[in-house]
Amino acid sequence: MERAVSAAVALATAAASDAGSDGADYDGGSNLHQVAAAGLAAGELSALTAPSLFGGGCVIVVLGTQDAGKDASAELVRLAKSPVPDVFMVVTHSGGAKNKGLLADLVNAGTRRVDCPAVKRFGERMDFLRAEFRQAGRKADDAGLRALLDAVGTDLRDLAAACSQLSADTTGVINQEVVARYYRGRAEATGFSVADKACEGNLAGALEQLRWALATGTSPVLVTSALAQGIRTLGLVGSAGRGLSPNALAADLGMPPWRIDKARQQLRGWTADGLAGALAAVAETDVEVKGEGASAAYALERAIAAIVACRTGP
Image (cartoon, rainbow, N blue to C red):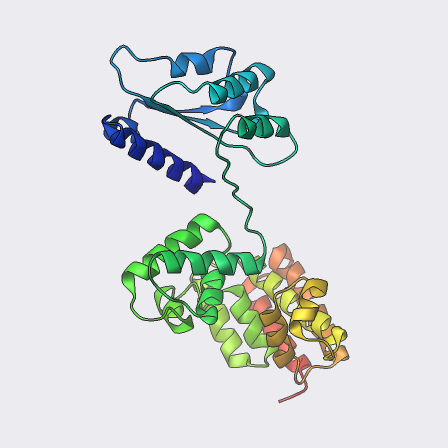
């Protein structure tokens, strides 16, 4: 939504310049007003849109119109139907049912509507990253995009900034190796990396990742949580059987297809009893990490050793 607002303000600035006004007046100066709809009193918008003694226009950004009162809503609709010359208005709405009628009234009055759908699903975040790199004139493969999500997280602001940095500081296709090199210490040493190595039966690799993760500030509680999630994922995928494709199972299991593929590879060497034993070891470690044990790092090392021992295959 912030980007949509910024784009609308930029359009207003361009329109002012085309009309012969000084576009600088619109760009974050005294003629750009940002107000919260919840606090607008009757007549306040009219006062903001009134012509200035010194001439020039203004841009008014009204945030959260779902919380606008009856008087403020009526004033917004009136201004939309009878626009004030050289005044540009941008309004935001959460998109819920609250004060939904105001949106319809504004659209009916000729207001342009820009939808900003929430990005919540894994696939939507992958599409968001692809669009960011495409806009920057760069390409990234799926492994690189997944590595970037693992390294940075799911916050769209952080992801957008990461895409901008990678686009400016690297060359060629942005793949897993590029992301790992750029975010070394973040992309390679998270709790999930520790869990992956443990589930694969790689004791030395899991312990190495654990020590590096703890050294770079990863909370022991997060490592325990990742271990538990890794074991539970193996149990879920294992119980689902291999008759269905990852795409068919994704919705039922609540995880992306690539994660199901990865879990199926990790399941080699695991039995139902082994998974139960590993989960019990993680549960015991969780208690120790949260204050019952003398050393969280030692408890995690023991848990990793126990998980690897529960795996019977090569």
